[in-house]
Length: 562
Image (tube, rainbow, N blue to C red; front, side):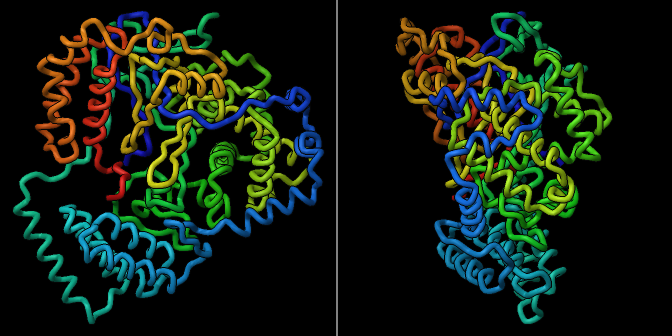
């Protein structure tokens, strides 16, 4: 089973020795600290082993105020769905209410939204009660109408295993027979595709194609270059994020692999997590540590805490973690791991080492952000295994510093925030963070199943880049001489490939695999021909359609609720 992945596809013919650059489709909303005294204190504290960050940096705020803030946040962190708030505990009453809402949506043929209500019903259903089996059975009917026959049969099986009432068993048997009949008549079944590199993988970094390599120089620092020519449409990186989270309140994804529209099963003890199957439930080590704890319902601190849990899971003891972090931060930041070994434990250590080597800039933190870090520290300290592990003053202060360090890396690295269904998926990839920025990129990145974020104007892009990453972009799209209309605009607009793409762009969501393949190839042909020109609206439009074609190949990750 493939876990959550980013992958990168070349969109411009890239010559050997060219640096690879990518557009940030989302930039974190972090404001620079203007208070020079605050910044001076922060930099000093980061070099201190180990100062009390919160006493020194939040001195104007009484400790009672800070603790009251944390208590209030924890007390009000309820499960939120479509503006409705519920206590974060199993409840058959709440489960029944969600199932009834699902039935109402089902009656008007809103299969996907009905399914989402049934998933919410499963979240709250008490283990061993009839509510579980009823929600599974009702969801199977949604799968049937969506022509997802294997999923329909699986839900019917799960409903029976959970003591579906005998009084309604005939209806379930009839649905199973109907599903089997329709499966025989189905012309085209949905095939799950996993992204693959277009080349052999890099020996040291298997997520990276052999056509790319990591280099370092004074101009770009650490960056990635092509070591040979790369054609349009070639996949050159497939990387699992070091850390990834999503707002568990407003949608249902597998907490382990983040697939959507699957036969989700709920965590038996909390309402925050659902999984594809028992394997995903068993393999989620961080949820075993934090099951039922409040940070899942506080999006502002979720990724900080998740990144700490991922790190803790890599080491046998806190002392080992502390020694590793101190050694990594004491060596030059350009000293990246030489490889990601095959041995899992060594590979995880290398990945965490690379994460710590990503740039952490204290200028991105302000007083409000330190308040968030204080909240994260308090919330993670509520988890029994964390409280027991960080049991001395030195270890507690180390944890404070580690959360701060992670926050500054996550804010400054190649992190992504994808708004969808009133929430966000946030992720950070180690190797992807080494790609240079360009608003007119020669490579695009995709988080399968999510919609891209495009910046609407040069001014907006420049403002975000300056605030967040502290540089002024000088790519050909941002240069003062840039004009959105090429001298070849008319030739481009009457190009046969462009006309075909323009005429078929709204059919992508309903296109067959053959039609998608044709449209995708038309996009590649157009980009081969014109993408070396100054970035234009036409190139941007074709790139967007190319992205949508690729996303349509991965329906298992389609998270849009219709």
